[in-house]
Length: 500
Picture 1: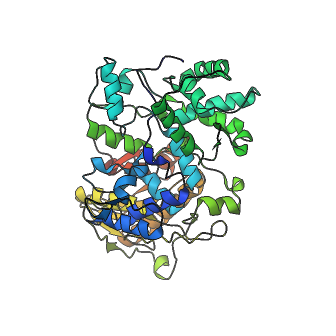
Picture 2: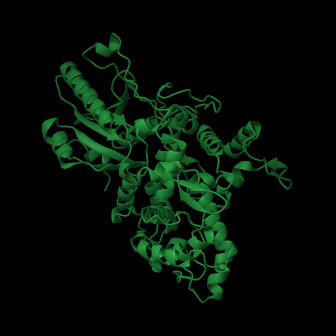
Picture 3: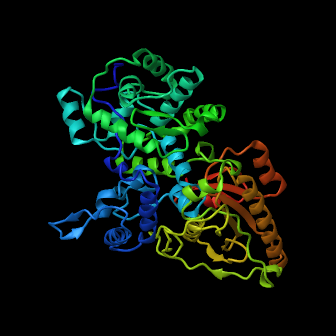
C-alpha cells in the first residue's frame, strides 16, 4: 500500500449517506427543511411531516417519548452542501443557494449530486474528528490540532476524491484496461494520494496491484463504500457488487469530462482554510461548497435530457423562464412601487413557507412555472443589505425587483438566477429589463438611476462583458456569494454591495 498522509487517513463521510441514496429522501428532507425553517419547533414538524410520508423510519426515542427522525438524518443535507450545518447557525436551518436551486428546478437531482461530489474535498470546514480516529492518532503519537481541517492541511492533503476517481476511470477507459475500481483497490492505490495533481501515481499503482490479494481495513473500507454508494447516484459513475465504473453516458463524453477534470483541478477551484477559527472556516466552507461557480457545476444540455430523465431527476418541476406580466400598469412610463415588506434579519428566505407537493411529477420538459426560492432569497438579502446602509427599499412584482433610494442616489436592482444552461438568456433578459426600468424611471423623475444586475452564482466573466457593462450600457454586474456577500465584476453602481 502507498503510504497514507497520516495514520488511518481516509475519506470520511456521513454514515447517514446510505439512507439518502434515494432522490425521494433527499428531496423530502430538503423541502421539509425549507418549509419549516422559520418555525421554533422545526425539528418536530419536519419529523412529523416525513414520518407521515413514510420517507424514513421514525427512530422513536424511548427516553424522550418522541420520534427523532430529523435529529438522526439531518447530517445528510450539510454533507451535500444543501444547508449550513445547524451546529454553526445556532440551531437555525439555513438553506444554501444550490439547495434552493434544486428545489426551484434549476438543477436536477443527479446533476446536483454529480456537482457536489466532484467539488467535495478534504480538507473541508464541516468534518470533525471521530472518536475512533482520535484514539488511533493519539496511540500513533500524532499531535491532534483542534479541528480536522488543520490536520489535513498540515499533512499536505488537498484532494477531491470523486475527481480523482473520475480521472482514473477515464484513463482506464482510454487505455482499454479493466474499467472498474474495487473498494480495496481504491483504499490501497487512491486514498493515499494527497492532491489531484498526483493522480498518475495512483493510476500506476492501481494498475500494478490489480488482481492482487489486498489487506482490509474495516473502518476505512466503510468510508469508501459510502462514497461509492453516493457516486452511484450521479450521471457519470455506476456501482455494482464489485466496484465503481463509468456510466455509458460518461464513456460517450470522455473529452468533455477530461476538460471538466482540468477545470476542477485548477487551484482556484479548491477551498483553502484561512484561519484557525472553526466557526469562520465552517461558514467559509459552506459558502464555497453551497454555491459553486458555474464553471464547477455539472449540468446536462437540453439535448442530453429526454422526458424520462427530466421526470426522474426533476420531481419538483423543471425551471423555465417566466417573463414579467405586462398589463396596462406594466406599460406606463413610471413604476408603481411599494415598500418591500421587510422581515427579521434572521429569516433565511423571502418566500412564505412554500408547500412542495412531492407527488407532482412533471410529464415532460418545461411544463411548470419557475419556482423562485433562490431568487426571492437574494432579493431579500439585497434589500436588507441596502436598508442597513440607509436606503428606503421598494419592489414592484410587475417590473423591477428592487428600487433603493437615499438622499444621494437611486439604485435599480434586478436579480437573475443563472445556470450553465440559461446564463446567456438570463443576462440578456436582465440587461433589457434594467434598461427599460431605468428609462421609465428617468422619464418619470427626470433623473437617471444607477442600475445593477445581480446573478445567483459566480461565473468566468469575459473581459468584453465587463467593458460592455461599464462603458457601453453603464450598468453594474455582481454575483451573490452568501448572505451580505457579493463579488463585483464592474465598478459602476456596485459599491453598495461590496463590504470591506
